[in-house]
Image 1: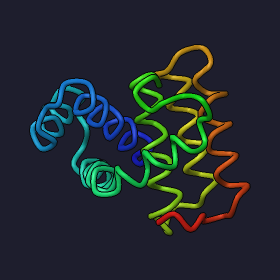
Image 2: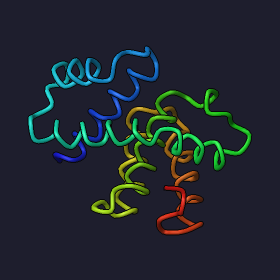
Image 3: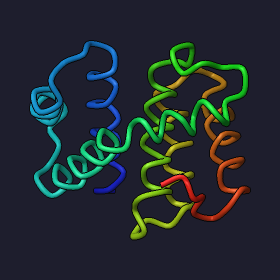
Length: 138
């Protein structure tokens, strides 16, 4: 449950930063306090947030490529950030199996996204993974 909770925290931080332009560290500190994220989960959540932000340009380019006719700005903020998080795990975290990153993203989409978010996220990630297990975007 710890990593799942950390992913939820990371998503909430990324969402807040994307939506409001809030400072990353402030958004993180506020979110972990608000949702009560335990200390071990905070470390993993911070690694995810930091990683997504460090590779955001690459992640956004991949999302644009595979979302066909949907510009990044037109995607729902939650979907955009779930995709960023999942793609970061798939492309840059060799300690996380691709299937785990994709499945966790779909679960986040079902919980936080709209009625079609799970299918949309699954479709994008499936297409990325079809191209190569670890596509050479990184």
